[in-house]
Amino acid sequence: EEITVNQIADVVLRKVNSKVPIEHVPMRRGETEHTRIKADLTILKDKVGFTPKISFEDGIAKTIDYYKNKLPPLESSYTKYPCADLQL
Image (tube, rainbow, N blue to C red; front, side, top):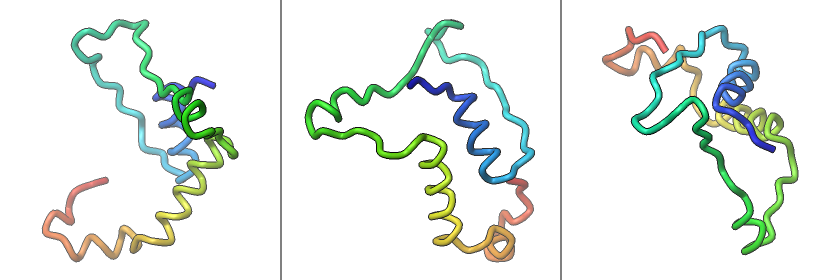
């Protein structure tokens, strides 16, 4: 199943409950409105028998949960770094 960059951004923002607007940047040199960049899992499937066992959205949710449990809260990081006034 093909997933666009906009769909990826939408899923991630929803999963982290963010209201940050998606910023669209100019196309890269050589791209057109019809340019498609996508991962092809055929080689993984053919060479090592890989097939996804969970959906993209579930994978994103698990990844977010993993990092939430591994990283300190963002608020506590502000006081540790000189660029604490940056808005993320």
